[in-house]
Image (spheres, rainbow over the protein chains, first blue to last red):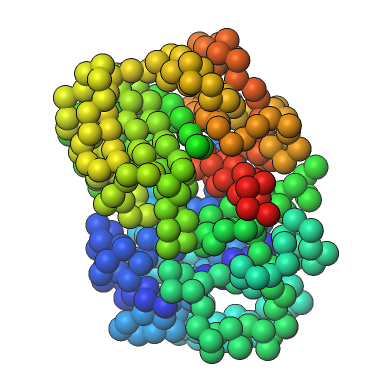
Length: 199
Length: 199
């Protein structure tokens, strides 16, 4: 299983946002939409062995986790409005500590980065934190078949979050010589794992 | 210079489309928007050495080329609506054989795949056609520093177009073992060239 965890510091935590203004009033929700696209789509197919975990930390009710599960996911098209619409529907549900399903393959609950890190650790999932000064993904010996990749948004990852991530034992990896958007990093990560898996 | 040429068989050739329905009535305009994003964006920066050439073949006036020039481009944000809006403005201009500028770094004219292929050949740009059975991008000896990558849309590339492309001398390359969306291919191509250029 490949997991992607994206920390969204400004993303609204209410379903009361406009699909016409996701970069603005929705708190850069467009970034999450593109991460969902690159995590889950193949040409004329979907990556069923992928889960995406969005940690939403924006107003008015920070600390919600929206999960997209490739295996059971339905109603997702590649465009930003489609994933935005599924996030919006999830945020319209009342979120508690137990996950609830909003649409097939999309779930919401309360929680934050610490919640997910401790769950992944407990289940033996290899934690990888993407940073420019990490080891090269192409040459790393890290196992990449049961893994969660942790990425930030347009403001990156805060010092406090980075402390949590490294304390949880995450390894640092890099995707290449230039600093890329999170959704582009995801595409490069998939390509490397695809090559290790299918060739 | 890195060029990306995307053939869009259904993309509308009038500016009279809604940014709220780019996958539908605009003829999968969303695909082009994502290709523009992955071609041109770095984290907090833009790739100034990139040009994107969109060949629009949809109704009502097929055969228009919209060019995005990274060096002079302005007003582009990463979200689909932003690139969609710039394409829309370009399509609102009257297109003739000579290119006209619609907004800084965005241009439109009449033309098709054959127009671009003969211009690239004339200027000594190396033609690369992306196809699953091509040589691996990671190990190819093809020069990748003055190059145009030719990609299709959701319906691929027609037999007639493929004949034109191969007759123009294009080499076949592949980005990996799985079939990917065009915008994802572009990210993988950039990563390979970045690695050859900057490490």
